[in-house]
Length: 122
Image (cartoon, rainbow, N blue to C red; front, side, top):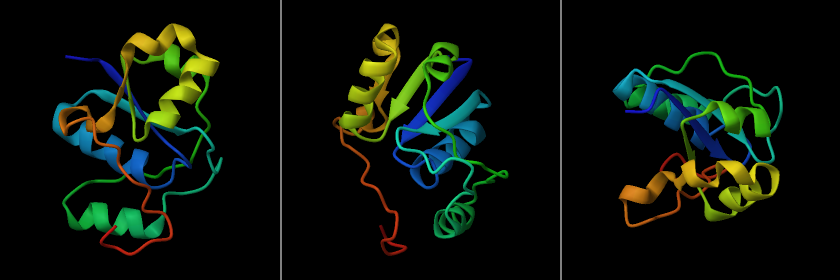
């Protein structure tokens, strides 16, 4: 079991906050989120929040933040939505490479597409 998990996406307003809420609820671990091109200070996307809450997730207040070397060093496990986001980590915190996996690792290494500004179904 991991004590701390960091979930990473692009802007840190859709995928990673929803995934963090899911992991928190399922595991009880300390779960944080960040983005490689974060819309720093922004709240969670309203549609992402609505869809998550309709699925029974509790989404606490959220403010987007940028992925940093410090955040990476604090996490036991780092989960990315897309491979290129992991590539970003390798540039800023190469020492964290061994604990960085795709969120879709257990779904045939599938990337999770960005739903921002797309339909609710996305």
